[in-house]
Image 1 (cartoon, one colour):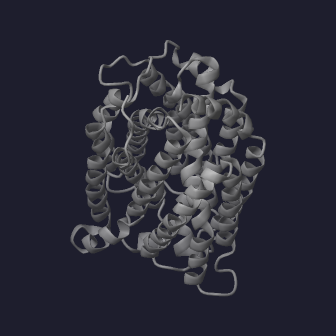
Image 2: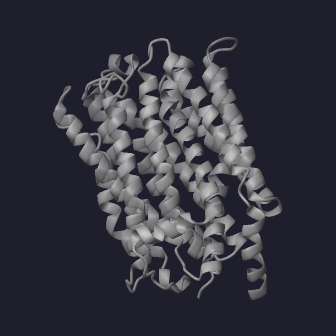
Image 3: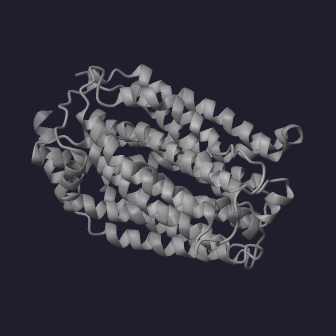
Amino acid sequence: MKKLTKGKMWCFAVGQFGWSLLSALITNWLVYFYQPDEASQAAGQTLFIPQGRVILGVATIIGAIAAVGRIFDAVTDPLIANLSDRSKNPEGRRIPFMRRIAIPFALITVLVFCAPVNGVSAVNGVWLLVTLLLFYLFMTTYCTPYNALISELGTTQDTRISISTYISVTFLLGSAIGYAAPYIWGPLTPVLGRVGAIRATFAILAAVGLVALFVPTFTIREKDYIKAVPSNDNAFSSLAKTFKNKDFRIFVGSDVLYFVALTIFQTGLPFFITTLMKLPETMTTILYIAMTLLSFACYPLVNMLAHRLNKKRLVLIGFIGLSCAYIVTAVSGLFGPGGMVWGVLVVVVAAFPMAILGILPQAIVADIAQADAMVTGEKREGMFFAARTFAFKMGQSLSMLLFTAFASISPATGLGYRIAAITATVICLAGAVVLSRYNEKKILGIIVPKQDAGA
């Protein structure tokens, strides 16, 4: 088998840029588009679906649809992972899936925002539900095989940390460009109108994402680097075996809580900035990019510390740091300095934790997957990453219900947004408590000696 070069690692990481850009359009702007605040409506945003907590007086239409989409997404993860793990395609178990789904994935991302009726209509609700389900299915079909390659291409601790670092860089870049969408739709709005400009912007960004999705599929020959034996388990048997791993269950428990908190924060960021900090919507882009650049500046330090300290300790630091950023968001604008100062403070506090949590969780899953394969003799890397995403996407479905419900509480004063940020703080701290029970020493004790013996 060939050794994976740094150049190939970057080619692989470009795929992460592609899917993170497409995902960012949904994560960052779906609620903003379909449940706009008063400022957005004043700027010309059309209402396409009923607003407010109209489902049993608790949930919003957009929240319920987004939650159903995430639950569907979670259920399909183990199914796609099993298909990939069992694949006998001569080109490999992962790359063929990624190559075939790239175009549908990019196309459906745009169609999510193309509701057919120009006004509030049940037809738009059905359209949104169907297109969002397809979006999550296509994203899973690309991302589940992609994530499995992290463990399979990263055959040593150092390689896994390097790959995780590179894909974290491209993930943040993709997310940052997704947040930059207002700077594209702004100049287009006088010509196309606000809704038309937003749709055109997402079409442009989806085309960029599509090119990135294709890069690893045409530059990496899977069979040159991986000698894999297809799994014979069915999806649910393989998923059950994966969750029998105690350390994996502990890690996933903490990961679910982290992603619930993160999704509440990411979904709410445009609202936190415009309503709580009283800044224009374009500042969402500036502050997120500033956070991204500052986080990049922390990457060398995180990478160095990851080689010298245990990953668990660093991730715990990341949890606590993000909790601090969330609580700063919750109190922003209540007293003291102006909105820009609050925004900069959130950026500074969140940057280092984002660097940690952008790099190390993927490497931890790869460690657990490799240790499990050494103990059981079964290589189920795809299912480990799918089981992780299965769990945290179930959590994300809850976060969408929570945020959209909170957002409907006194939106003019921002009370609901503050409740959302406080909720994210509490959930993030709970994730740290769960992660403290993860036995990293045992996992490394299984894989490191065997790697050393084969060196």
